[in-house]
Amino acid sequence: MIRLVPDHATLINRTACVEFEFDGRVVTGHAGETVLAALMRAGIRHLRDAPTDGAPRGAFCCIGLCQECLVQIDGARIESCRQIVSGGLTVQSLGRPADG
Figure (tube, rainbow, N blue to C red):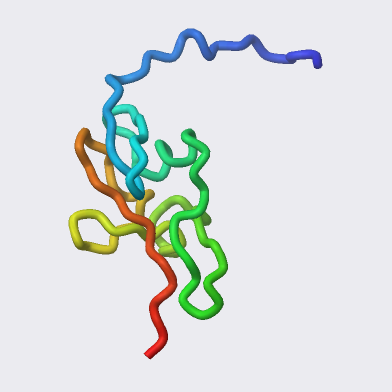
C-alpha cells in the first residue's frame, strides 16, 4: 500500500502507562486518556448489555451523550468516554437486568 503522508507515529510522546481493571482483567492505559480509549485499544468493545434484549453495547458517540458506553466505577454508572483512566481503577461492565 502506498502512503501519501509521512508516518509520524514514532514521534508521538505518550504519557505514563497506568494499569486498571476491567471485569477482572488488567488493562493498560495512558495517564490522561479516557477509560473508553484504553479499553478500545485493548480490543474490548462489549461494555454493557442492552436492557431489553441483552444485545452487546459499546461506544457510539464518544462524547458522553448517548450513554452506550456506560460502565460501573466505584458503584456509580458512568460513561467510560467521560472518565479519565487512573491507576488502580476498578471498572465493571453492566449486564442485562434480571427479570422480576
